Amino acid sequence: MPEGLEAELYRSGAERALDRTITGVTIDGRQPWAAEIEAVLPGATFVAARRIGKMVLLDLGPTAGADTLSLHFGMTGRLIVDDVAAIDSLEYSSARDDASWDRLVVGFDDGGALRVNDPRRWARFEFDPPTDRLGPDFLDVTADHLLTVFARRRAAVKAVLLDQAVVAGYGNMSVDEVLWQTGVCPLASARDIPVDDVVRLVESAPTHLLGMLDRGGSHRGTIDPEVRAALPPCPRDGTPLRRDRVGGRTTIWCPHHQVARRPF
Image (cartoon, rainbow, N blue to C red):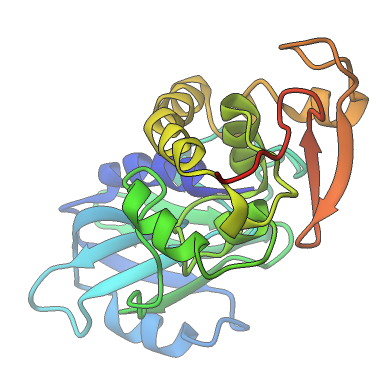
């Protein structure tokens, strides 16, 4: 957390900060771009809010000294505009809005502000970030792209999907959810996933992901934090769920309906 779904909620929330003149900036001095951000933003305006994977990109007006400010929220960062949080609280993080956790505050001439509040200091900010190494967005990825990548990857399919150079925006909970929904074994080698399973995953994943988005984020799937903690019987078939480590990440899956199948 936050994953691509949370970043989309933040992007939507950031639209309230558009077309407002920036009058001041307060930023955590540990940020590598702190001096540049403090120097460039005053007097500028944000003119568009975009998202690539897990990043929110705020495009600046033509008179600014940079094109885009990127916000990456780490595991515990939240976006707050005019004291309205895009997400009330994050799973596995504090729900407090402690001013001492503000890592970036952008003040506007009307008295409002955009803030990134992060208790762990993992959020980061920079101008004009390189995005050419990111894969297609997780809401737009195609079967042809995954089939091409999977054909040359021996790693577990979950680990491959979490690689932001393969697909930008997937996180631990959203990958577990779409693999559970589509019946794909997270431990199976990517190159062994049958073509029809890849097609089914790509065609059905946006429906599940957008449903989670409507409900509040990546923690609102069937394999939610309560299920992850308690490991109840699989909601689909009653088989005890399993907890494993894949690519260093806790993975919840069903050994009955998520069975690795031969690719031919």
